[in-house]
Each structure stands twice: as C-alpha cells, then as structure tokens.
Image 1 (cartoon, helix red, strand yellow):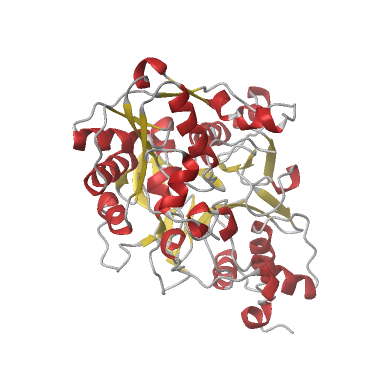
Image 2 (tube, rainbow, N blue to C red):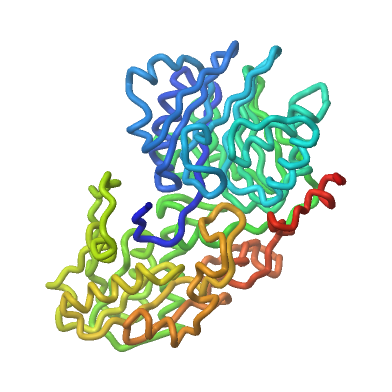
Length: 474
C-alpha cells in the first residue's frame, strides 16, 4: 500500500539522446531530473548502431543504475523512462522502455500517457494472434507497429498511431534512428533540445538545464520527428489536431523550473495564486503552502494580498517506503512522517493553507488537523485549481468518479469534513487566466476534463467492449 501524501500521481517521464558518446550517462542524469514524474521503476535502452542493450528495474533511478552498470552501456543513442503505475501492474516486466527483438532489427519504446482504447486494441490483436508479454498499454503500440505491413519504420509508426486514442508522448529507438511522436491533442508535454551536436528529447525542459542542453522546440500535436545521423526530420501522422495540454501539468505535475509550451511553471503557479487571492480573499495573519507544488501558488497569494508568506509546513525529504505495514491508527498519522507544522509560525495565527488540489480529501483533512494541533487559531484552505469532479483517463491516477470527494459532496460538505474555517477553489476561468496560454481555441489549448467533464477524445469504458466500433471486429 502506498502512503502518498498527495492524491494525484502522474504516469511517467521519457528522455532520449542521439549523437552523444556518453548517451547512457546523459540519459541517467535526464531521468534524475524527471524523477518526480515516476518513482516505481526506471530503465534505459542504448544503441551502438548495431544492437540495442537494456537495463531497467524497480525503484528510483539511483536504485536501478550504478556507475558499473552504466559503464557497460556503450553507445551514442539512448532512450530512458521513469514510471508510476496507472496502466498495467506495478512489476518489473512493465518497466520501460520496452525492448522488442526480431530477426532483422530491434525496437525500444518509452511512453508517457495512457491509451484509452488499449483494452479494445489488445483484445482485437489477440484475436488476430498477438501474444502479449506485459500488461502495459505501451506494448499495444509495438504490436500495431509490427503488424502494419509497411516497408519502413516511419510509415509503420504513423499507421499504428492512427489507431491509438488517448495521451502519448512517445520515444522510439532503433539501431539507426530515434523517433518521437505526440498525440493529436498534445495532452502530455515533450520537448527537443541540443547538447552540442547531439539531440535530446524530454518530457520536461528541466532535464535540459541539468545536462547543459539548449531548448530547441516543443513537439507539436500530431508530429512524428525522426532524429538520426543526418539530423532532424519533422513529419506528421495526423493533420487533425486539437491542442488539449493537461492543465495539471501547470498546477501540479511539472517541476517549477520547467517551461511547458513556453510558460514557466513557477510563474504560472504564482499567477494562479494571485488570481485565487482575488477570487477568494480572506483576513489572515500568515500564508503557507503545502510542499512542494503549492509553494509557488502560496507565494503568489501572499504577494497579492500582502499577507506574509511563511514556511508553516515542512517536508521531510528522507522518508522512503517502509517494509512494515502500519496499523490503521498509525496510518492515520502517516502524513506526519512526510509533513510537519512549524508551531512557531502558526501558533495563535489565522493561517491560509494553499494547496494545489483536493482529490480524496484525506490529506487535506490531516494537514488542517496538524495545523490546528500546532496552535493555529484559524485555518482557511485555498485551492489553486477548480474542484476535481471527473476522473482522468490520460495518465493521472484518478480512475473512478467515486474516488473524488468533489464529485459527491458540496464545497460546504467538504469544508465540514476538512475541519477548516473556510474553503475556496479557483474557478475554471481563473485557472485559464492564471496559466495565460495564448491559444485561440475555446479551452485555451488546455484539457479541462477533470474539472468540466469535457474530454478531448472519445472514452472507451472497458466493460463496453468497444473494439467492434474501433477495429471492426466481431
């Protein structure tokens, strides 16, 4: 059982490099910078232009790789992956990249996102004779590529991706090329940079800063980009696009030092806090943010209101998984292992507690209780995103509506459950204003499905067996 203090978890992050003699080491550092996107497993596949080698395992990047292991991964190209499980079981076989060998060549795949029609496609592929080795939806893409029947890999990938629905920032590696693609809605971020003469790709630009690479461009929805010794070739597999970048990248997932679609995450979160302060002002003595993703919004809230910002909550950064299974009583106190209230800051004060989201409500309730036990006179909860009332099918760990407290309870009922003195969320309009993306589409090019229920793709409930309409099967 995971003892997360947050209710949201992202599926993974991808990284790749082409044309660098230390490709495996560069990928290792790239994955380190993406560790926040997944902590359950990590992997690297490297190419020496003749064959692909893989190293992967469960745990953090540091757990999986050592200097000795990396020294054996010779090659000038590599792709890597950090994983958090939302699709497929949490075990070694599902760790990515996935490597597939055939008589003529090899193919490695790393994927960030979730394929909403994966079950339907897998059922049809099995009907046609495919045998799956993992429970990861990424393997579906590999089977579609192999079954496409096209003579070259680029056309095979294009054909496969026309059948896939959902979110995918995809990195593929073969002996003589690295290919990256982004779904037609651009639900997940993917950027390209240069490190000297080498090309690098990453789920977030913070990885470029770590390795000293220069940002070149974002991969656009529906693009398929081939990188090889001849350079970078930009192509498309879909001409129909509807930019719907996940809003939670700005609110919670991405690192503050990353730029997503040209917008710095820290500044976007500060702006969300400013707008929240305008929409839901409150008389208070101190503002504090729930570490780490809410600190920027809390600073923005404080600056807008003039209420001092203080570190009222401290995160213990040395808490890992424990091998013991705590009793329910200890589990209820588990949040204190990861967060502590600073009594000297909150005692006798009216505290504004800024958080990025409320999913199930359990964590927020415990933090409110913690602040009041530390002597806070009042606790006013301010959330820098709208109420999450719908599940995400694109790679965020909120799979059912019943898990979401805001889908079944009013704000007043949630306030009572939290034990706070007031509770306010940011509005949807306030979210888009705060992020400030310059896009002419009605949703400003963002996915708002978890707030509004308007999904950018068709959703395929597994129980409906939708492969008949998707693949023409019977």
